[in-house]
Length: 213
Image (cartoon, rainbow, N blue to C red; front, side):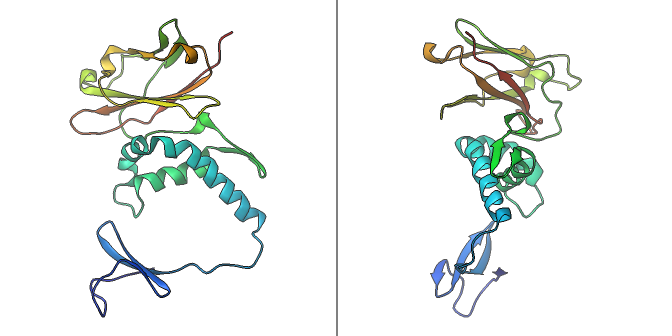
């Protein structure tokens, strides 16, 4: 890959012959097109592809949350927040041995940051929805100036539900309303906090709720 300010004919975007021109973070970049290989892929390559697919299956439905949640981690580095998150999950949230790899929801994160994370996180089903609570005795000041972010994934479905505003950390609880058909199902839940003014995040915390009945 090469970067440039002005080529022989100025900057360009798109494919020209065997090279592609595009902009990355405001920088003009040129790279050659990948060459197709006739060699069979190795087990290591196949395992990496499977890790990528498993990580993307988690990240893709909540892209905007992930971009905000990993923004601080990516600051000053030549990686986007999403790619930072992808790298983390490929390394830390994939269990098993190829070809029996699986996504480990317990090691997944929706954010990183310096705020104190959720402590004593509890979630349970009620007749109205999912009751989620957390401790409010954090040493962080101004808990009422911190927003709560909640991501909920219904196991075995493509249903994700996200709350990114309107839940004050200092309140310490939230009733997540859901349609009756989903109440009592198995869910994965992620909770994180961010300061309303600065945007500083906490690392997310995870809780798993098993199906009832």
